[in-house]
Length: 322
Image (cartoon, rainbow, N blue to C red; front, side):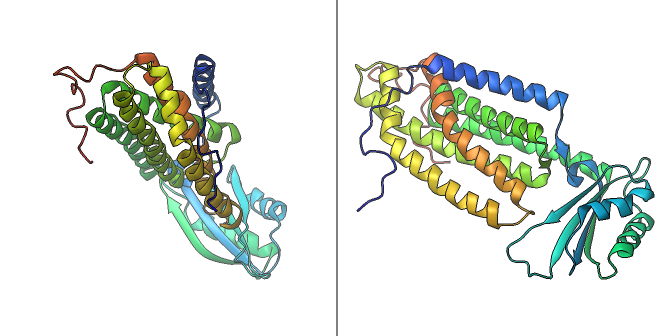
């Protein structure tokens, strides 16, 4: 018996309310951008500069006691989080103490790190400090620029790839879907104030690849059906193509989410932000392949007369595997 999450043959009308769904996506993007500029992101040490001290103790972590011990040092906003990991033993209690770079300093000085360690040892003499990591503001600023450039180059590469493989209408639809996914991901991180660090940039680039893969599968079937059903209008061809690939789309998304949810709940605090970004990205990426990329294609239209000599205009590299 083969497992099916959707029937083998479906005939859903995905574009019955396409103007409403597309409008909702545009509104969501505008709100995400607005929240980003008003609230901002909760940048991690990678982007703001500072020091992360990892603590380990046989005693349970008391975040309030840790904060009270560090407060007299006057270090400003100090972030203290307990690390939960199913692989830890009963006597293995771990916390991360994050200290922003102080004004006028490239990084947290060794004297400040020593003062923090001594303050914590006052409340827990058995506490140890397995690792101390520091990032200067100059380096973090370069990381921000490099991260933004990486995302923009990835989107630009997708634009060129789809343009060569299909036609320019397909290319604009695919890029619109990618921008939609990235903007909404940044928006949810801004709303929830989840720490935004280099791991999240890696997640954004992974989301670009995942969303593109899903979009290309749909677009490939659209191109095949455009040649096969010359008398059907574009809306009917799009609906047919999405329905034909729906089982593959749902199965891929669900199995990916199963793995991601396992990592989110069992993988520990270190990768939780990355995994959350991936979960969100898979959901919005699946949505955008249908209700953004395909909607753009429906709005722009596409060349249908394949019989004329210039039928391959804009598609002369259609057989190129990149």
